Length: 290
Image (cartoon, rainbow, N blue to C red; front, side):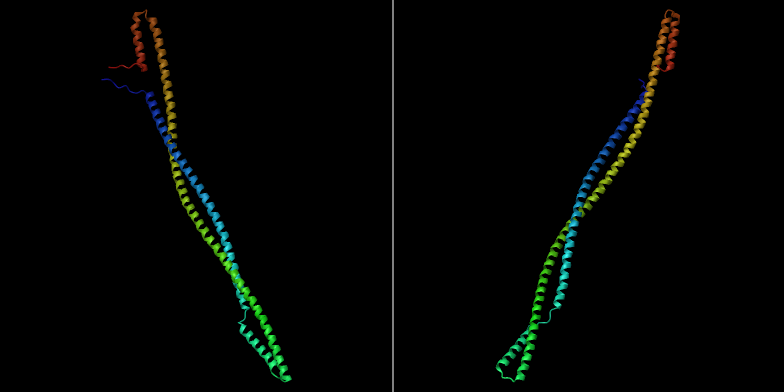
């Protein structure tokens, strides 16, 4: 039966060193994967952040534009309300219909003139008639002037009506733009909110990858430290082994010199060989097999 040769201390140390190096390298490779995935997530997050920033800027621009149109709409409506109030005041200056009164005065004046021209009157009656006629003419003139003023007021009211209509029409157009821009701004805001959620998710995933990277990197650093310690141990064992080999060679060389010197003395040959064998056995460099 062949005996299995046991591994030496140096062989065992070298095996442990190789194992530590392999495990360290495997962890470094795993850490590199986590780092690459983390960096990829950070890159994706940056792209989404840029998209969100662009949408946010566009949303803010739309909001500013919407507010400008809203202010113009409100100004048009304010002016329209002011004109409506002015129209109410102007209408207050109008009296009731004076057309009938004018027609009545004109008939009275015409009747008086006809009476003066066709009727024989006493001087007192004619003077009284002329006095009444002058009063009616004065009243008629005053009423005609009032009618003229009323016509002007009516024209002003009609002009106000047109201005009010124009102002409300302009306000309606501004309001349509306000509604349109507000809808667009709301759409951008909702997209920004969705991207914000995506940014948060990507950030959380990147943080997890970074934590995994740090965890694996820490384990790899620990194994690297152990590997360096084991490397020093291997070097120490290797140097010790080499020193022992040199010492054994020196002993053998010295024994050879001694043996050569004693070869002439055959009686001392067996004794020298036995001493050399015992010395090698003592140093552990000769293994006796059954």
